[in-house]
Image (tube, rainbow, N blue to C red):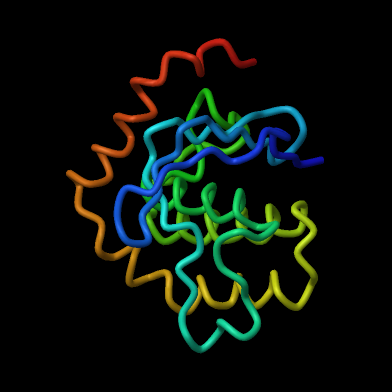
Length: 159
């Protein structure tokens, strides 16, 4: 069973539509392993295309943690890494990683209580439009975000 930690989200606005995570968000996709989003990560929560805004809510909703998780997975281009999720190793196929990141968003939204229609609309939107964000990554931007994780010493305390 998947779950998020119950702690409320703690962020500060650092720019227009940009928020810095002040406390970690921990997510377990299977009830055993943990994916951690470290403090310091910058998110835009759900950047919802105008076409979907009548169906999909933005910031301040039950799916906020799922949005942050998805932003983290996209920014690192990792679906998994050894300490965070041991069942699936990172793929060298970037498109396979993107599909897995999007799927985890769908599962996390379901856990957060997002209704079937809204969460599948969110999933459809990231499948249709997420390639623009994914494709804009550079080796430098991905490595910079991964460095936030590498420097997060608290994570070593987790199982």
